[in-house]
Length: 106
Image (cartoon, rainbow, N blue to C red):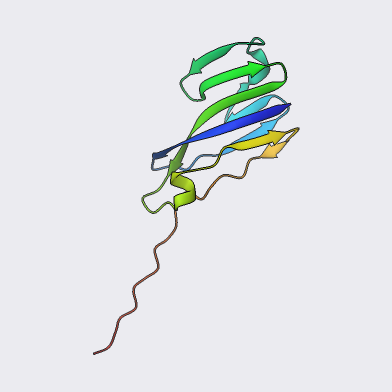
């Protein structure tokens, strides 16, 4: 199985977790069995946004929650392409803690 995962960044109080086991995509703890989508179909989904299937190739778009100090790579993420992957999917950082400004003594 090949999965093309497009990430759609959105400011959120919660980060996003995604895992893939076989054809089951788990997003924030909810399982979605992609194999239930008929071959050649494309559907709009409230969580997976747009889901498309072409044989054993799947493509979907998932919202990527990020914090107020998210790095550039999170706000403008690359597409993730996985083949025969099982387990958690590494996503860009949710947020970074800004470095404290040092006090400058007069």
